[in-house]
Image (tube, rainbow, N blue to C red):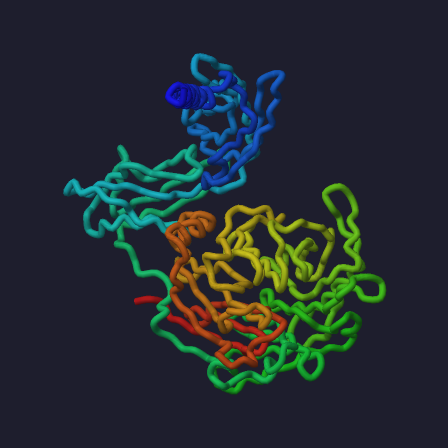
Length: 561
């Protein structure tokens, strides 16, 4: 009897094993269903990194997308959630002939077809060249050097007489290219001409040069450092406590906004700093009143000075105020008294009782046109003003930031770009956004040193750099000393591509670092703010770092030779 039971048990287990195998195959394809539950374009936008969700109508078996015109429409890739065991009939789809294309779902012998429509936006991005392949007279083929900063193609064919242009790669990929002085794609050294680009009416041009690749950029192994900071024991007096949380530098002057010993807005000429005896002049504060603190944050824009108060609860009795000085001799002009009403996406938004003024972000062109941004201390709301002529502010707009930007956020316009901004705080990564703070790409917080903020993308001698300074707060154990960092951001035809390339292989190594905080425990505090600034002086790149209790330092680097 025992043997019979045991034998039956073995048969039963064998049966379960067999049915288990059968169910595995059924689980892979339980019913042959061919539904698309979710679908997104995986390679949208100029850089091919935008994920764009579609709207599915299951009754009509249609899916609709709205995508940038710059998307590579000849090779659309989809990320989809399908019925278990199902797959799409193709890896990529060509929308160049029609904006509606059939997409078939296959599950075993069963299929269903969805009509996928992509509505493309109007073009926004000026076309760029990403690569040029050439052939020299001796038959050698090589890639030319494309300088996006100075819009030049260095062919590396000096004294060759002529070269043949084999291929030109562009973004967007549908860009039409024209060689202005070529015959059968051959350009002559005495008059090589240029490459003209046209993407749906948006145009640009790159000059062709037979010269070899020049040496670009700053030499970070040479230069001068002017430290007035904790690390050198030469701490500038305004930074002794935590009452100096904002500084800016434009190559001509250093702006320090301080409450150390009372409200003081100081402007120090660069030549005084170089001379080792910075003193500067204090701006006139007649009429500067109201707020939790009278002065809090400041910025320089094309020689004009802006300072905000700090309001821990915006309202009638404590408005957010913005002051303006045309020069160091002028009296302050009140540009703004914000009480809380702003324009939101669905009407007026009440921002009263929020805390504004920990940061001030002035992004203006040489004519004084652009935007001014304020970010709340908790980092959940942004107030933006349109600015014209340096002093005319209008259209207060409420914007939701791309992430929570707690503690000393910064928004800076990318040098030379009309609609690119870096957005950072000591508790977030480094975002690249448009003027509405829609994210374009992100350098994760883990990829840069802890507490880095006030990141700026700058250009010098046809090279692109990312600069940032780290803050420090005693409550965050493990924070390093406040430190200034410079990263090479030149590898990429666009800012977005360069930022992605920077971290493609993990956390990047900086070109230059300098500790301003020192190891003194006194440099810890409850205000982990940090500042950067930059300018070009006598052909040299000059950059600044500053932080509370750490002081400031300015670094001067010559061109590479």
